[in-house]
Length: 325
Image (cartoon, rainbow, N blue to C red; front, side, top):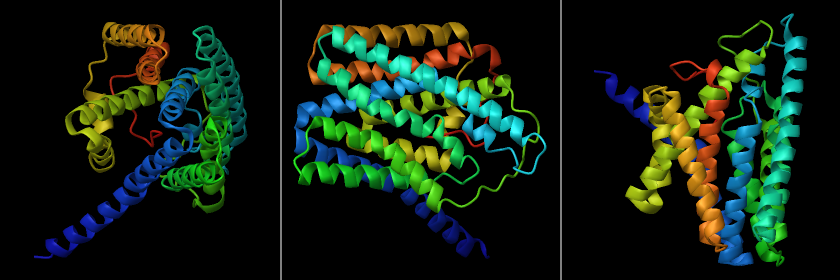
């Protein structure tokens, strides 16, 4: 008899959560890219979008999922200082690897005759330290949805400034990098303290972080595949459908659990997507082709991350606060 009001209340709560965590950031992202496209032209906007995907691919391969696990340590625990030292070391190592990765990628793009995209990658790469290691500063805060809102507002404000003041593609690339720093600052200021349901008051180990990284990589790969298929089926509404499934039914996490954990399959997938990315990259210098190369490179990066930390993985993804982009 009383199920009606409770269901309605639950539906309203779900709608609000979807709006704040998924739809508003997506709308901000689309509107920001629209303004950048108007400001610097369609071709340069596509090149910048490709550069952003390349940088994400580098970050996925070179960094570990340390911050969420560090956030599960209580500040009052005896092992907290050890966890902080271990997390800092791992994050700094990831940052160093990311710098090398960005430089190598920029060099490859320069060699290919894509100097403009190489510079975009170098500028957009300045966003990586905001996540690795600076995100340790907000490990004990409830990052979502504040992180996404801060990122979206920073990107929108920066894109509007580029449009209003006649900025070029270098200014747009700088705005792309600043959005992560805006998200970090917003989280520091506005995000509430995180309530730890199941604290892990034990030393933070490399094995624990590697397991988390492998599980997270499989979940992100599942989401990207869902998003790609949804975009093919539903066009512009594909991303909206994928985000809805991620938030309402944890579809990416469920699919990650169902994907058979066979090393040969992941190896073939990684090799195949890497080969396709290379073919796109060396076939043409057209912006759309470079974007295709970046999209497949990001898929290959997720597969490579799973393979890198395969020995630390398990048959099921770890649902405990997996990081989301």
